[in-house]
Length: 263
Image (spheres, rainbow, N blue to C red):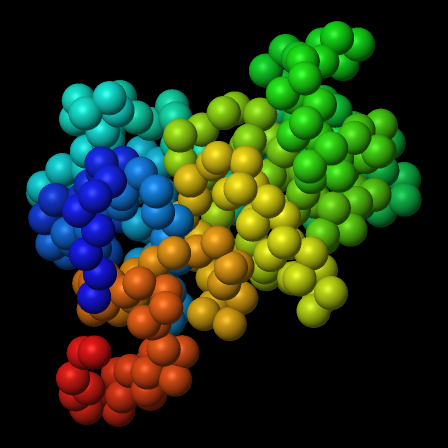
């Protein structure tokens, strides 16, 4: 377990219960993120990791408890911090592109390719002027290697390039908190390593992140790990105290209904 009282909190879940449609998914969660921390959320499929990310981003309502964001030591409710939280997930990205472009698939037929939007149409959808980009925007595009991709169509991108465009779209909205939901999915070993390094660079540029990923994929800048099982928190750890072997042991034990004492 961790204890870091020397920094102010950024986000706090206080006895939070979340329902998705008619199903209770998360129950009585208590979790605080300090302003100098970057967290990973780990757990098996169906644990509620994505619903937790979406609840923090404001997609699902909190039916009990509250989610509080602290800014200048003034706590407020979800409707205040929702615009400063950016969630990057393939599902939400695909839905957004479909809405904005009217038509999108992972892969088009050759005859459909010309109907796909250009990268610049997505990245600059908030009205950035490509001919007069600010230094901050140029820095972000350079950091992610997106500038050479701007005049390409989305369907022409590799999985790794698509991930970088998604990150650029999110970072240009200058979020207080960036949530990455399973960004390593669909990437080969080399692309995973590139993405890990990019995430480290994003953190080093001052962004705070929550990352949903397999324990083996965690970048070096992750400081803490939250372990979720069946909609409940079963462990909160400093990354240095988090054991992948123990995580796997809990996973195996959960499948066989035995009990493992938390470390």
